[in-house]
Length: 278
Image: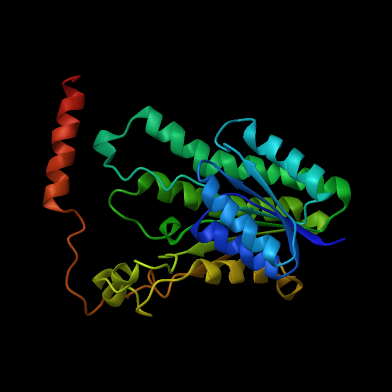
């Protein structure tokens, strides 16, 4: 039987890169998208051109029943699940703690934590039932380790996934199911029209390797982590960020204004409106 994988959020960028690389490595795939069907079909065509099967599902994984329904369908279509890659996520609200609302917290929690954990649980149950010594890979972020002024929601939940991975790896080790994270830094698809963005000062001055990463590079990392070459790896995080968050990487650069004055004023004005009940 061919190797099989489920990749969530595979309609563009990192998820698309992962799915295509896995197809090159011989996997049949089930992929999901939330709203970008055109991108998902693009991924499907690329996979089919490689001679692999691809099942495409529209799925809203931040709904409580979404992850189990996805895994039931993928298991039925693929026959078994050898690899789950949890990539679909909400990139998050960038906001001050002064303007956060319960709705923001609930939304990003459902998309970036509950989604991953419940997908992993549903996939792992099938792996155990089928006696598959499989793999689960969570796509986290360097933002799990590096603090930014307006990133406490997304960054903290990515950090929570990193920590959860360690316990889940212990939990599933007796079934020889490996669980790991891949943590991208700045990853941009290399497509026409993006040349100026790729050459921006953020890239040339802030990333030690002076370039962004590509979705393909994340896909190659995931394929390695899930392969027999990494058979002794579980409960760990592989970081791909060009050195972006290395300790001391800002030495020699101009001082960064961590809190911009214009942003501070916008936040203050909004917070005062909330205090006044407007």
